Amino acid sequence: MPFYLRTGKALAARDTEIVVTFKAVPYALF
Image (cartoon, rainbow, N blue to C red; front, side, top):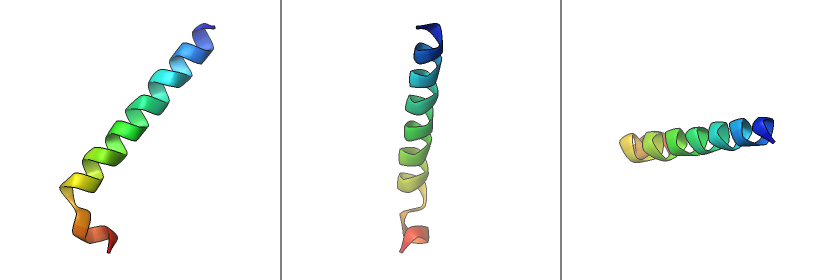
């Protein structure tokens, strides 16, 4: 179970980073 919790936090952090990057430079994706 601890492994699952660490993985969940890692995925949440990754998704947050993607969202922040997308909002910071949206023009770079198009």
